[in-house]
Image (tube, rainbow, N blue to C red; front, side, top):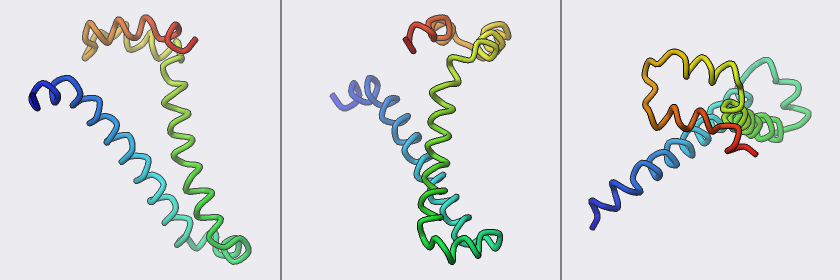
Length: 103
């Protein structure tokens, strides 16, 4: 039973864990960068911890927007489909239906 669940649901949960982990890492890393950088010392004195939280939260938002808009980029889709290197048949089918998916 557990093996069937792992085969059916495992990749989805692994992807979600990777995606959440990457978003948390991006937030923590850039929040730390804005908290410790000497370039933003005066701004930190004025705004406080709000600078770290706002700029740290903006990076995962930009990353997720990029992930949403990337499949709609026709030039990239044509390049990936045309190369044939590392593109499996099921992925090629998904690339063909990318605009339908986003409607």
